Image (tube, rainbow, N blue to C red; front, side, top):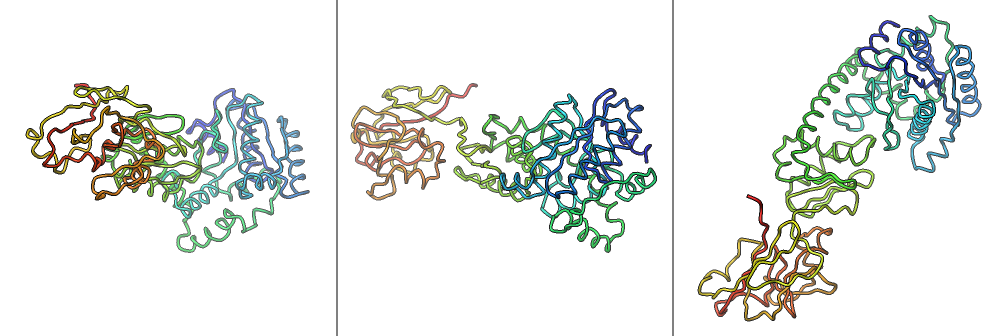
Length: 482
C-alpha cells in the first residue's frame, strides 16, 4: 500500500520536494493512516509535515478527547500541531446552513488559515476510494452534470465559501478503500478514534453509505469499482469539454466585467448544446467562484430561455445571479447589472438637424433626417419593415424635433391603439423592452408630443395618410467600419 500511494502521489504531482504540507487529522482511521503514510514517505518525498485538527463542538467530551488524541500522536511522532475549536452548530444557525455544510466550511476555513500562517501551499486530507463513491452517488442523486459526477480530484484548488485560495488540496488516499485503510491501521498498531456520528443516518452522506450503496451492491457486487471507474472517465470527459469551452469562450463572450458576463446571442446559438450548457455553467462559476452543486436544472432552464430569442426574458440563478436577454445579447450577472449594449441609448436631449445627420452616441449611432414630398414616397403609410426608420407627417409636427430619454408621466398614442393613449411605462412593459434599458431608450418628440419610440411604434398623431403633403423621414443607424 505504501508503494501504491507513493506512485499515486508522483503520478498526480501532489507534492513538491522541500515543501511544507498541512495534514488535516481528525483522529479517525483515514486521517491517521494518511499521517502515518506521509511520515514514512516524508524523507523520500522531502516533505515537512504540520498536523491540523479542528474540534467542531458537536460531540462534547468525545470531540475533546479526539483533540487530545491527535495532539498526543503528533507529539509522539515529532510533528508540529495546531489544534483549535469552532462552534459549528452556532455557525450553522448564523449562516442558515445544514450542520454538514457548516462543518465542512469551518474545517476548510481552519485548514486554510493554518496553511497561510505556516506559509504552506498544500493541504492533505484523508478522503478515500469509498468517499469518492459516496460523493459521485450523492451528486448523481441530486442531479449533477459531469463536474459533479467526476467526484473529487487528486489535486484541486482550495475554495471555501466562494473564496478561492492560493492553496492546493490533495487527496493521497483517493484510490485506497476503507477496508485497506482499516487493515493498514491494524497492521501498524494504530488505534484511531471512532466518530459515532458516522452511524447517524439523519445525515445525507451517512444514509448513502449505510443504506443506498449497500442496496445497489445487491444488483452489482462490483458497484463501487464501477462508480470509481466511471468517475475517472467522467473526469477525462469533463477535462475535454472544459478545453472546448475555453477555446470558444472568447468567440461568444462580448465582455466580461466584475458584475456580469455578456454573450453574443448569434454566435452562442451556433454552439453545440453541450457547449451552450458549458458556457452558461462557466459564466456562473466565474461569477460565483466555489459555488457548489450548480444544478442541471438551473443551467438547462437558462439555456432554454436564451433559445427563445426574445429580449426581456429573465431567469433566476443560484446565489443572487440572473440571466437576462437583450437585443442580440444575453448576460449572466448580479441583480441590477446593466451591460453596455450596442444600442442607441441616450442620457440627455439631443436636437435633430433637419435635414442632416446628428450623432447620438459615442459608439457611432446617428439619426439621419430628411423631408420629402409624399409623391416620392407612395408607400409611406403602409407597413414599415425597418423598425429603425419612421415616416411622419411633417405638417403635424411642431418643431423643434428632439431625441430624449423617457420622462415621468410620458403618454402617447401608439399606432394601432385606435386613438387611445397609453403610458410610455406600460408601452415599454408590453413591448418587453428590458427594464435596464428603459431609462435610456431614445424617444423622438416635438414641442408637444411623442412622435416615435425608436425601434417600435410611431404615434397616430404623426401618421402619414394619403392627404399628407410632406414626409419627415428619420432613420437611426450605426456606421459600421468597412
